[in-house]
Amino acid sequence: MTDPASNQAHRAILSPPDLRRTQGKSRRGTLKRADQGSWTVAANRPEPVEVLKAAVAHRDPSLLPIRWGRMAQSPFYFFRGNAALMALDLAPWPTTGLHNQLCGDAHLINFGAFGKHDGSLVFDLNDFDETCRGPWEWDLKRLLASAVLAGREAGHTDAACSEAASRCVQAYMAGMNRFADMGIVELSREEIGPHNDGGALAPIFEKARRDTPQKLLEKAIEEGPRFRNKEPFLRPLTDEESWPFLASFPEYHDTLGPARQQVLAGYKPVCLGRRVAGCGSLGVMDVLVLAFGNGPDDPLFLEFKAQYGSVWARYLKEAANTHAGCHAAEGQHRMQTWADPFLGWTTVTGAPYLVKQWSDHKASIEVQDLAGVVLGDYLELCGTVLAKAHARSGDPAQIAGYLGQGDELPEALSSFALRYGNQVTEDWVRLKEAIAQGRLESWNHS
Image (cartoon, rainbow, N blue to C red):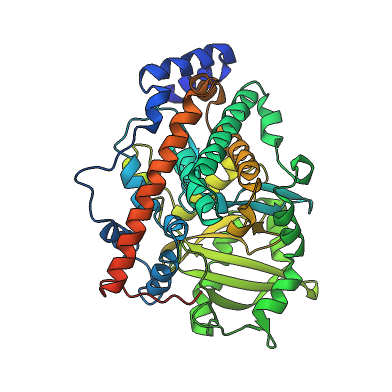
C-alpha cells in the first residue's frame, strides 16, 4: 500500500512552479524576510565552553587538547568547531518551515574542489559529518557568519564583510530562482567547474590538480609499506588494531553499486593508519587504508571516519534513526552533483563509519587567499553552490517564492552575520580564558 504522505509530496512536486512559488511566498507570513536578521543571544544560554565540552564527550580525550588549541587560534578557527553551539543558538528561533538536506557545517572552508568520476574537477560542498534534513536558513546563516569571521581574519573591514555576505545571499537567491525553473534531470547535472570561474577558484583548482594518490604515497607512506609515524597526527595501526576495519570491508563493499564493487574488488589493503586532522571533527576515530590494485603504482587511499549523527538533529522532528554512516553518505549523495564513487558506509566493532576516498584531487580555500576582491567573488560562488544543493534536495520553487528579489533579505542576513560573528568572538575569548584558567588543556601545535 502506498504511503499517503508520499503521494501528497509527489503531487506537490508535480504542481506548477508558479503555484509552488506562491505557496513559498505565503511563508513570509510565518517569518518576515526582515526578521531573518533578528537574532539575539538567549538570556539563559549555557556557558559556551561547557556546551562545546559536552558535544565532544564521546571523542578520544587524549586528542581534545589539540582541538582546543586549534580553536583558540582565532575566532574563525573557533567557529569551525562550534557547530553544536550554533545549533543551540539557532534552534529556538522561527524558520520558514521549508526543509531540505543540510550540510550542517556549511562554513566557507567546507566548500572545495575535487575530482569527479571522469577525472575532471568540480567545486562543491565537501563535508557532511553534520548533514541532516532541516530548514535551509541554518546552512545559509552558518556560511554567512563564516564569511564575516574569515573576512576579518583576512584583513577586511566589517563593511567589506557585510558586502560579501550580501553578495552571497543575492547569489543564493538568483541561483534558487534559476533552479526552480529547471527540469529535474537538468538540475541533477548542474555543476561548477573551472569554466565557471572568473579567478576566485583558480588557487583551489591548482592545488587539487597537484593532490594525487602518488603525492599521498610520498607524504604518508614509508617503506614496508606502512604509514609514517608522525604522532599525534598520523601513526600506523598494529595488526590487532587493523583487523576490525579489514573485517568491515564486506559490509562496505555491499553499500557500493555493482560497478564500484567490481573496481573495489581489484584492490587489496596493505596497511592502515590513524589520522588526526581538521578542527570540527578532531578527536573522532579516523582511519586511513592504503590498497594497491594493478601493482605498486596503482594506489587507492580510503578513509574510514566514525559518525555520530548531526548536532542539529536533536532539534528536528525529522531526525534520522538510520545507521549514522549511511545517513551521512545519503546526505552527501543528495547534495553533491558528483559524489565520490567510493562513498559508502560500514560498521566497525559496533560503531557506524562513513567510508570515502582520502584526499584524491581535493583542495579548499585558505583564509589568506580571501584578501582583496576574492572574498566577495568566492562567496558568490559558495552561495550558488549552496542553492544548488538545497534545490536538489528540497522544493526550489517554494524557497524561491519566499526569497523573492530585492535587498530586504540580503540586508537582514548580512546583519545577522555581523551580529553572530561578534558573538563568536566573545565565545572565543571565553575559550581562551578557560584555557588560561586551566579548565581546558590546550596544545597549540598545528
